[in-house]
Image (tube, rainbow, N blue to C red; front, side, top):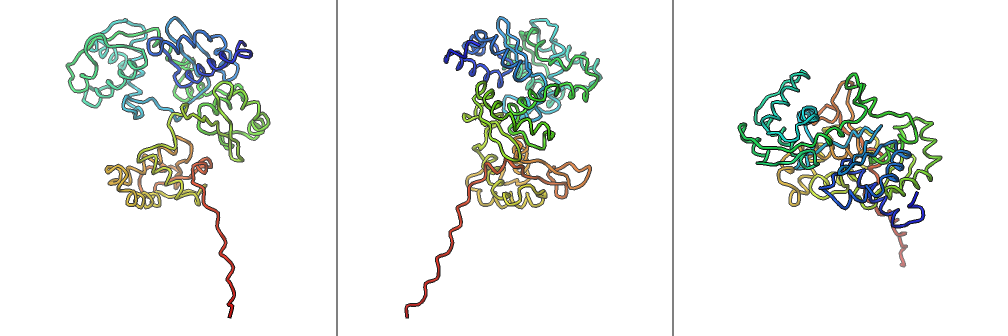
Length: 390
């Protein structure tokens, strides 16, 4: 590999690898310099990803696509332009739009696209409506595609369709890029469960564990078999060397698991600690529950804690969230669960976990949460009592 004796090439390889990990679809027009770097090091990057993670890199004249084979990112949702995660309806619409445009044409009106989408939905047995919420969902999907280079607006904007069912626009579609969106696991899958099993294949234990370290905030011992945990601990030095060379990650190992730490924080799907009401509340909740780590905290107890925190932080937190401790609790718990700092628990079989209603389970802090708990000052022993001089 050329980078072994060329520090500049090694740096460029790492920059390219980090970028592809975050942006598996990279288009030349969106970032010309980065695309040129990826093309320049295509062979070495492909070798890295293939041999070390089991991924596959495709590069053509203006598109780079990293196929994350064997990776099932449970906690990395697609996000709308506003930053919120996609709703279920938007995932369905995205699948239908991609399926109905993969064969072209390259230029299509919004109205014709909607007709193709409806035909595709009928074939799949999916009922669609054209109410305001459905139109807003479709606009969010099309905006997502436009931002990622799968389509572009030639005339008018798709935003108008959200408020006007008669609005139209003209789109340029990239069927060649759309064809790259589907993972190979989709081919031949007999249903949703079969697709999920195919997507997270574990044919190579070492590659699967590396993928989990790279894609997930933390890999807990309970995620692995005893044989896998022993292998990971035995090869920890080698794994850290490989992941540091590719992504500048450092492994932090504890008895409960291993986390890959990115000192820059730029690889994380969600930065933490984070500013804002939700981020601050999450830190305060970790501190408040640190003595109960590992134990299930019922929802009623969580609500009491959030009501107390809302009162003490009312001057600096968002007024809307202070006025609704239950809504704040939902958002904070969702953040901690996404980061694998907590998990929802059920009070009895069949419960929905920390769903937001008293009596329906709660939350348990996971070991990695201790990393963000503030250090307590050491206890200072009281000075010995001085005897009377008289």
